[in-house]
View 1 (cartoon, rainbow, N blue to C red):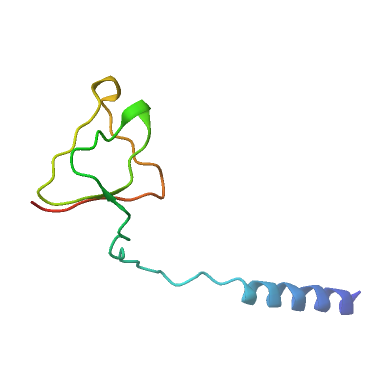
View 2 (view 1 turned 180 degrees about the horizontal axis):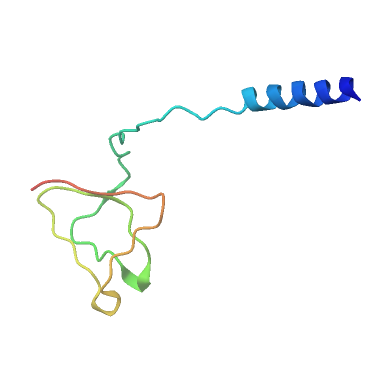
Length: 83
């Protein structure tokens, strides 16, 4: 009986020692991956489709009025250049 108790206690100690809390990890966002350029003058959300890519500086872009919201799918990137 004592041998079983010691075995169970030893096993519990091994399992407890194996369970450790991961160190805190701080991530900094990478630079966004540049997608394909969206053409100047494009209407971005025609037919309610999601937008992804890069809006170039000094361009003019339109949102279709029937789908006034701009939608970017999870995991996609929309980069808007300054200018």
